[in-house]
Amino acid sequence: MTSLELSIFLTILLTIVALAAVIVLLGERIRNAIREGTRAMKEQGLKTLELERQNLALAAVQVNHSNYLDILNQIALDVLGKPAGIDQVLRFGDDPAPHIVALGGNFEEIVFTPAREAFIGNGERQISPKIPWYEVSALSSGLFCVEELEAVYRLLSNNKVLPRTQKWYMAVRAVS
Image (tube, rainbow, N blue to C red; front, top):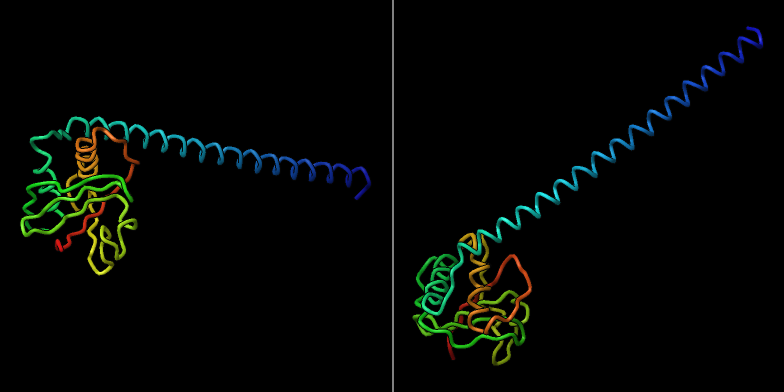
């Protein structure tokens, strides 16, 4: 092999290597663009779904002074599997966390809250760690049960704003 042939061979080889590197880099850029496009489409789809869900919830969740006890009873029935017999709300508030305390048919307190950790303890308004907590979500009750509880809380508290949450909790304790 002469030096001319060797230099042509090396030039062709380097050109092929450079071309392969360019193809690999362009392929990686295309793959990243596809990933970014997929992520953006997924985010847009989730935002659209959330807006549609909020519109459905506005139409489906109708809470007023004449039906909020029925809504609390239905949620308690769904979660507990038996009628709770709620006939009045004893108290509500946001100390130590947002909560609604209703009186059940067997004279027990039924506590609804999005932050159960704030209520676990042994104080007067605290709930013993031995009492079980039940999750209230779309899996354990109706599709819009969280929105219904938020609407009941807003109705009772004159439209106080709550932090968004995907689930609430419920505990049943005997009145002492």
